[in-house]
Image (tube, rainbow, N blue to C red; front, side, top):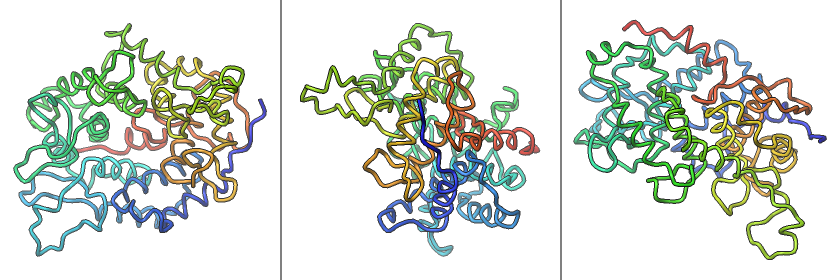
Length: 394
């Protein structure tokens, strides 16, 4: 199958534009500023174009550290999602709320910039915040909320996305490499067992994961569930039969609606242009980001599962249908304006397929794609920096 080119030069220009400014239609994304920084930095890493000077890296790292918050008692450290929310020093800082996801995006971005945050951040104070966001009782026991209230209790809705974010922060704070005795002495670790049980309770009968196990499964939540378990060292063979159903459900998320079957039917969810794409739920159209959520989930369950889907068709969909030849970047679908999230997930999908599957994929620009880590969703280069350079003293 002949594949179109990955427009690496335009992708680089697109990410660099997004790091400087965004169109007016994206002004409501200010509350996700650190997320946008993460998409751009690691997107550039994945195409081997993060060619910042030492001065530029220091400048970007300084900007991220400016989002850091230490609670009034000096017991917790975390990050706010945007400086727009920063309260003046004379204000009641109790309402300057840190955010779990912002902390994740900040740490990931600092890794891409080669900033050793172990020299600046107290990992135990970060983990005390993460622990305080975890529900300790009730039907949501083990889950996480995005912030804590003034009473120190988890505040806000909880779901599998926040479990993933919490377990990723734990990984970047290297709590998984501490001894059990060290973690007990600190008393700042999350309750790993209750988190695992919460994730497992969210598995639907179909094998996919949903908000509570009784509602419709979603491939984005399924990735968060599987990656959380992976980061916590869960052995998937303990529930082999159940996770085989997860595998099957994910494989069937690839859109392959033959025209001979649906072409003459008035089926509202059929679109020939979606061929090869992945969807998030049954009877939904294809979407760029689900290429990542589905195939990364398969890879985390077992790398050989990548070969159960047709990656040539998936690659063709991304490169020919959702890649913008004019602006660079990728949109949600062929009719959508490119955005940082879908551009990032498209590139990470292509990088995963090119470097980790046995299927033959050849297209112009492929040699620029770099290996990535599917658990933390960062480049392998950043993972190596975390492993070798980030060394906490205690």
